[in-house]
Length: 225
Ligand SMILES: Nc1ncnc2c1ncn2[C@@H]1O[C@H](COP(=O)(O)OP(=O)(O)OP(=O)(O)O)[C@@H](O)[C@H]1O
Ligand SMILES: [Mg+2]
Image (tube, rainbow, N blue to C red; front, side, top):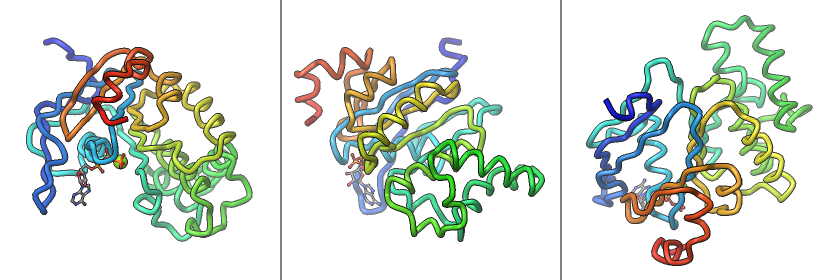
C-alpha cells in the first residue's frame, strides 16, 4: 500500500463547528516517522483545528489513522488549554506517573525536564504564575514527558522573546521526534522543516519544500500571508 509507513494520516478529514463554521474540508495529510512538517496559513485557516483532529480530539468526518505504537503529544496554541495541575512539577510529572513511573523517579525526570526548558527553580509555582513564554515552554516539557513518537506544535514560538525562539528552534532541531509545526514564523518554519503544507479556508493548498513555499510571494499572497 502506498505510504504504508505513515505514523499518522488524515484522509478526507472535515470538521464543522456546532455554529456551522466549516473549519476543515476534505483534508488529506500523511506524516512519516521522524518527518518535520510545517503547517502555514492565515488566521482562521484551520491550522489549530487540524492539529486537534490529528490528536484525535475532535469528532471529525473522514478518517485519522495512527500507528498504534506511536503516542502523539500536542502543544496547544493557548497554554491555558493545556495546563491544569496545581504546580509546575505536577504538570510535568503527570504523564510519567500515569505510566506507572515511581514517584521519586518521576520527580527526578521532571526536574531534569524543567532544567532543559529553562524552568529550573520554578517547580513549586502555580502554572498560572508563569509568564506566557514560560507557560509555552512548560507545555513543551509536558508534551515531551509523554515520550511521544510525534509532536503537534501549535504556534510554539508565539510569546517567546528572540532568545527564547532561538533556544526553542535549536532544541527542535536536535529532536529525533518528528513534528507538525503550525506557525506564522516563516523563517523558522523554513529552518526547521523540509516539507510545508498550506491551509486556506480549511482546505489544503500548495504543498512542497518549505524553503520554496515560504519564498514564493504568489503562494503567500494567495494564502493571505
Ligand atoms: N470554538 C469555535 N467555535 C466556532 N468556530 C471556531 C471555533 N474555533 C475556531 N473556529 C473557527 O474555525 C476556523 C479555523 O480556526 P482555527 O483556530 O483552526 O484557525 P488557525 O489557522 O489555527 O488560526 P490562527 O492562526 O488564528 O491560530 C476559523 O474560521 C475559526 O473562526
Ligand atoms: Mg491556531
